[in-house]
Amino acid sequence: PKGRREEEGKRLSLSTKNASPLPLTRPLLFLLMIWTRRITIEAACLLAMITLEPVTSFLAPHRHRRNAIIRTRHQNNDVIVRIEPTKMAGADVSNLLYQEQENIIVQRGELEEKLVTNTKQLEATVIKMRGTGKAGGFGKSSGGSRGKASSKAEGKAYAKVLKREGVLRIDNVLSPDTADAVREHLYKLRYQSEQEVKEGLMQPIQRFANVLLKQNRCDLTIPLGDELITKALEESLCKSPVGATISSVFGDGAILHEFSCLMSDPGSQRQVIHPDTPYVDGRGPALYTCFIALQDVTLNIGPTVWLPRTHNEESHKAFKDSAASEGGGDSPKDTLIKTKPAVLGTLNKGSCAVFDSRLLHCGSANRSEDVASRALFYFSFKNPEVGYPGNPASIRRELGDANVSLGSLVEDLESFGKGKGSPLIDRLGSRMR
Image (tube, rainbow, N blue to C red; front, top):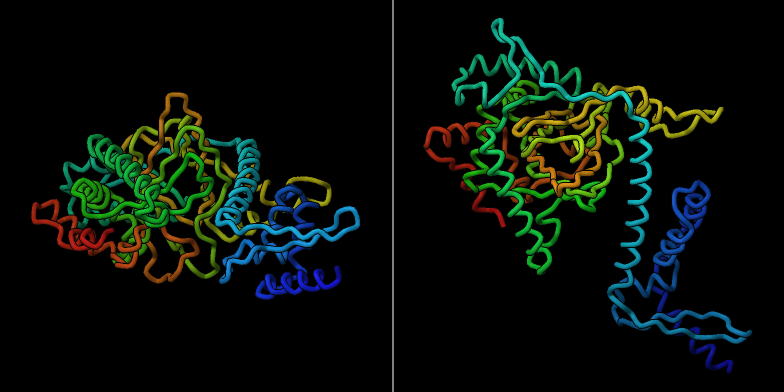
């Protein structure tokens, strides 16, 4: 009856009056994504479900928790469909969209793997110190007996290579025993963190950072305070050339920006090539990241792939251009990936790769058949003259908020090495949740 239809029309208006108007650009964007095959029709429909009006009011939190009302036609008669609100509906749609996005990334990664053909192993950098070749840290340093002047000169020599290539390898940064112990400790921490998240004691972001292609891959943020982690930092920053190398570029005021562990389990897919931070004209490097292998990294467990000398304006400009040529040839991006030589991070246990965050790189697939998980203990230091570098940091919030400088951290670690304790690290550790 007419009165019933008017009543239901008013209810429909009430249930959608708080929904935001749908911009014209959104449906056009869906059509464009389908036309360019960036997304399947099914995924576009799902995306429309969570943006088109009255369903938006149903998925979004509603103060009165009204039933959503959708009017449709069946055999020329109006049919009113009432849908009970559910907390899971939006999450289910989001998960499906995320999976669709990941499928696109996986396909692109597989294509890029075919494009990258000129590869070789990342070799340890050999520098000349007083007439001798040197390419190591912990194992070459006689337990940290390097003098300040020698350490500074060594760091300067490594920094020169790092600035030119964008990536370098330093061996023996961690002793084998320390690497083994840290690996065991971090996998236990991962299990504990997963349980805390599962039980609702912690939010995922309080224990894990976001990572590209997260299936069978995680970025576990690490708390300070454990003596084993302090020992690993002492070996890395004081007994190897890593600390002096970063200090040579950024100075002792460099800020600890990331402190985490990347874990790649069997079945993890190859990532797409990407920089961690953008190239900004007139600005130097924003971050230097140090990946330390906690086991031998072989080809089958997914070594990192770097494209040396791509941390510059020319490479980033080409990388952003995905348009194919008029004749149907490769895009500037694909041409760059095809022609640039690549190096593989097949590191020995305890070895380190230091790289400029602007350098193009990716994690490769873990195709191991012996259930071998790859763990990279890592930290990044930020240029103190740079504010936000362009990418969220993988670090516990309590540690990131402290803005710990490289100089103060090294001083504390040297005190720890002399058996005098580490008051700064202890204080930071006490703040960790």
